[in-house]
Length: 571
Ligand SMILES: [Zn+2]
Image 1 (cartoon, rainbow, N blue to C red):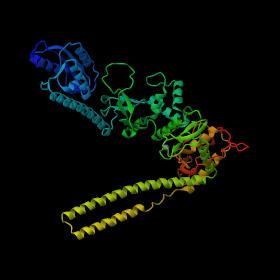
Image 2 (spheres, protein in one colour):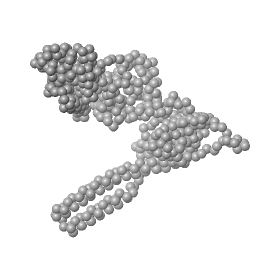
Image 3 (tube, rainbow, N blue to C red):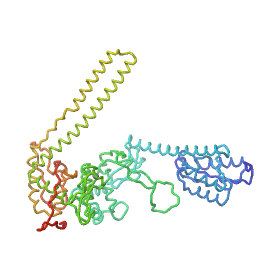
Image 4 (cartoon, rainbow, N blue to C red):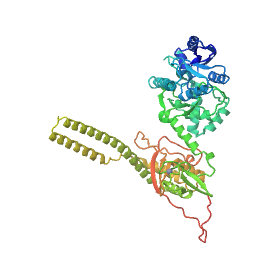
């Protein structure tokens, strides 16, 4: 270049150091010194120093970089001098954008560590180094991530930055183990226990709990009132049952910022929930458990039911709301009003089964229910059928695994034998014999696989009494039940209704205790009639699961005396 030793050649120095690099001992001052020395040797004059301290090279919007680009357009210098490519950007795209922007304004970008040249090879080199810088950035974040994972997986360490409500975070300097750890705050823990108990015992919704806490002036940690979201956060967090999850959230760029700002040091200021499979559960010490895992489970179930059956979710009340599932794709079969008629249809519209008139499905399910309660042996048969199905399923999976493992073993031996033959260790006769043995073993394996597994013993006889008793109590009220009571009974008895076009499969749970008492008979713990038909639902820890399979019936079409079809009239 001809201007190279020209004193009128003005350069701007740009330096950047990220927080991680600062931690590793790199400073912005050393960069400035190096650049000043370099410019001095070349005889250039320094028009300005621009330094972004504590800024990641993965971020394009940096305050001093922007000022540098603005000053370039004001023609305050002729060229930009930078220590290395990774100082300018750790993102190839950004690198391209910035460099092209400078060059368009006639400002050359000079990297101190790169040979001075002005040819395509030089540009290529810059791009290659840019990719390296980007790769290095990934490497740094990967290293940090793996370090954290180690702390969680090996040391079982709590890594959250803020202690959840009910706990305080004690830093490593003040804890016995030397690591940051959680401690229970007794007053807050009592409130948490109270909240869980309200859902568990009184089936209270999260909204009602927030209202009650506010009425009782039990205050949250920072705010003046309990919000629905903070109550739900507590009721949904497994940390209270003794399991903390690492890797639950993924950092991401916020779509909207609460505080408008031009420059952000952290692009990913927002977060979203990862898939549950990616969470890493960490079992906390037993004394950090605020509620029992069983109660936590029950509360989750109740909360799910609160959502599913919330009256705010629909205008027309479907008897089977959120219970019906598509037999083909598993999606919900949802209420679908059309031209004043009501039907259920596949939410995903997978097209395997048609939509079904509300009356028709309601009648099929209600009839099956009434029939079963009046003749409880149907429930016992359904229980046996379900147990056999589950057992057979488990057994089959196990068998299949054994089978494929056995086959794989034989395949490997076969390869070894052929190899031995190829190397002339085995004679053709020996080979034939060995292969014959393997063939027999394969047949044996096949035979074992096809043999049916014996069904598990089921103490049906022991359950007869309680099942009949529970059914009798419920059957008595069937006749004069109003819609809400019917809906409540359906929801109590059935956990899932699978619609398969011409038939429905009803998965149910009759709440009687299956627990054996000391005298080895079954205790007939039966719910009071009020809980079947009144407010709130009853969920004993164990009941009898059963399955019913029924054809879908068509209710008679209402006609007038002349045989004309009457207009649809939902009651
Ligand atoms: Zn479907």
